[in-house]
Length: 303
Image (cartoon, rainbow, N blue to C red):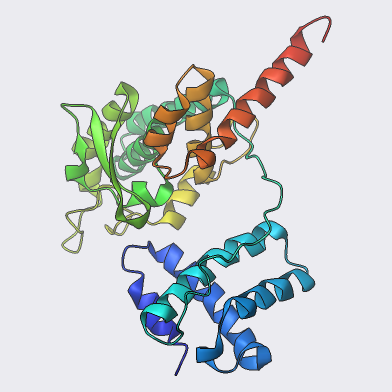
């Protein structure tokens, strides 16, 4: 019997590349521990083995939230071993890991997000006025990317994975494929739609080559599908008014938080974000309560 990590990674057919890479890294860490003495024989791996491994991570100083994250790929791997007949029981079925305190993301205010987007639009107008078609195309692409991230709350990987056929301008929605291959349809506001139309008509063609994939909406300067790292660099070029650069996922946090602050129902936000569990969405209610508390303490004379 072997651990067959390669077979496990190959079985993750619906996972995104970053997820597969993270799962492989965490599972190989477990296998290294097992082969060094934790459980040399794969067929002997049981729930006690998995618990001892998680306990060893805690002894080595890993944070509780990190251990909890590493437990997820371990559970998946143990299910894989059960399906392959390496072990007789699913050792990860009842495996639990301690969860540390939730860290609330830092979210820009709505006026800060609007100022960022307005700045990107102003930059695009300035570049177009200079007559440099290549630079203008880059600016149009950046505006469309920023507007779409804030206007729909999609993950950066989902955004980079969009194709031209996924944007339905006439009906103002996009089709998104999320984690686990789950599809959802999202409404898109006029600013994001206008930016997408402008980019598709006057920007995307500037980057097309004979190697350009026809199903890629956002392209890099080489005519290939825009990658997550490319997107991060774009965001770095468009900071908030105070100079802070936003990680891509912060746009998703801002989207959800500002919806709730505007009175959106939590269940609706859950559907828009594509969360399988409502508890994942509830973190944003804590954010809005904290912001309300901050406003109250700053403005009320008897706070």
